[in-house]
Image 1 (spheres, rainbow, N blue to C red):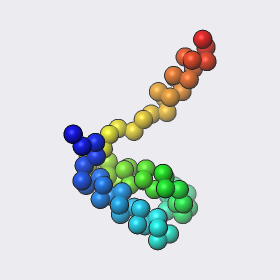
Image 2 (image 1 turned 180 degrees about the vertical axis):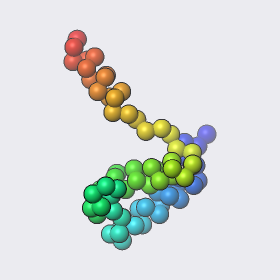
Image 3 (image 1 turned 45 degrees about the vertical axis):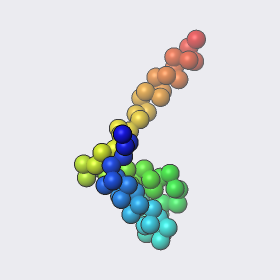
Image 4 (image 1 turned 90 degrees about the horizontal axis):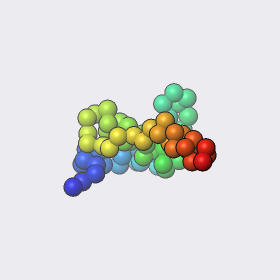
Length: 73
């Protein structure tokens, strides 16, 4: 079973081309995106908004909770 839909792949592909051209800007600050990982995250976010099949984001709350458990031991 596919993890991402075809639509999601197309969105990421479009965003990666924008990054390569140097026209991809980040959300709030509007700065130019240089990180490959950040570009992929933007593409998946756009695909999610468009209703494509994309797994849910891993929340920061879960990560910090697990760190607290291991630190307290």
